[in-house]
Length: 285
Image (cartoon, rainbow, N blue to C red; front, side, top):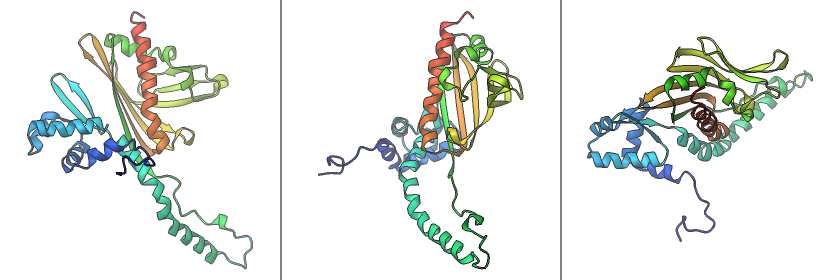
């Protein structure tokens, strides 16, 4: 009986990722995309296989979630999505770090025991700095492309001037928030306004092209999966009678299982469900 058919063998949600990474050509394609997005034509020219062969490899990577495809006119742009790799790390590497850490813990105990002076009873192990890191740093990137049936001017106004009208109540971070505010100017903030001068700053505007794009920098505290720094870019483009909102969120810091698993889901709920629905149902406002 093979492992896949064994009744005690657990299903592996990352099976498609393992399968995608098993081929050297597909791994090479991911290496190329680490330097930045590439069109399908660029990737075909970079490999000796036929166009059909390269396309088959790309389809496997897209199915595994390792590549996100965006179409711009007639061109198909391929973007690397590292989230499945981060999930693989969380599932298969981090659990075994304890095995690697055990010898270091024994060394730590040995050093603390040897350097404590019996002549100084006030000196305790609390005075010895910890030798073990609390977190493992990493990088996570989420990319979403959301079509909205509204003119670009209407989408920008809803994004920057009417945030309090569509921001879901369950997305507030503070206990008693009054409203969400967005000062969409250079150096301005996206923040929760609370009673008695309280509140929470989500992001600070670090770059803006009015009517088109805004770049924001923020911090995730430990309560929300951090400590991490996040750079969020929201960019609008016109495609016929539609507007496309491209969202890119790059997180640097503690990007553990909780952050990786919930970040994309949270952005989709906020912008695909909340913002998109609001703009499309209030196109004249």
